[in-house]
Length: 457
Image 1 (cartoon, rainbow, N blue to C red):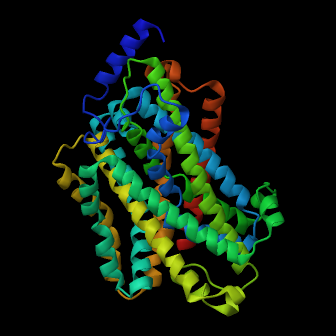
Image 2: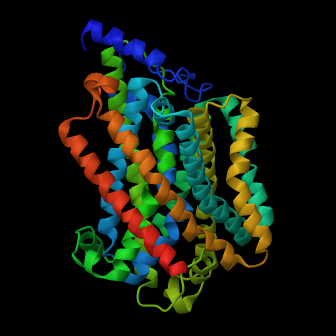
Image 3: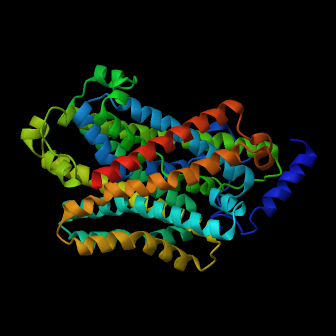
């Protein structure tokens, strides 16, 4: 980048939006070593990818993935693979957007819209975060009930209070949040790796499952589950989150080499963590295939899965209460880690779209209340009817599907725009792949909305 271009880009970064830094209290708070080796530098950049990855392995994915394995054995592993590759592409673009511009996706989108449109986009994004929280809060509350016998409403209230934990962790440093979430992710990976190992899956079947088959598009039931897996994988709030937390590392944006290094290591971090998410989603589907394929078990609810793992008539000799308890522990870890990132995403979209500046504790309380209120109201109304409460998971995916285009399309447009990104704009092949992915995702999600609504009525 020429010196004049560097100066021009720096002025652009300073002037974008005019509404302050994204996640101001942690923006640029993590030091990065100068002239360090590859591994030491990578360790400094490792962390934001973990927070992103939990959105791709949240409880909303579990039922769909396990049901996919139970119904079609290993055939839908190819869908998990393709979805993960798309997620890697989009999240790398999201991180690059934040690093290059110094602004998050919500701030950049708001800058290029009217005040009214900004409020509309905030509402859509907030609904998407609410929809994400539905699965996370319900999953955590059910896990607490399965582990400790707590009433569902009590579990929802306890889970909702994680905003207080987040406030404490933010004061201790962003690295503490990354460490807590990374620990929860490790718990999830170990639990499912152990359960899959006990189930003795077919290695040949797994390898063949990663090869796409035409049956995915011709078999209606398989196509519907495919849409569910894809639709539950790419989360709109993760794109806003990724563009913000990529800025937690200290960076001199007037230095081309520093920007390039930050993009490189942030992308590596993101891809490593999303590969872990790919492993978890694969393990879920493999578990469903190895234990439940060919059985008549109903697996539409978390409670069904919990009970099935301790039922020898369903899963055979490996059935034990310990397997069920480990499942509940992983469910709790997934729900808690996802709600932390959901709260951060809520702050990002609120500040970015409506430029609301209030004390941090009040801001997080507002975003949490907005997200929790629908779940709590539904739980109170259907008190004692867990099946009805879990049905919220299905309809929550509709909101995610509606919000997805409003995040993906601006992301591709901004990262492909040389006036915004300079020399770091998407290369031609990246741009075309991103547009293909965006069109496919939007098309599949529209189809999923139509199918879900038609089945409901």
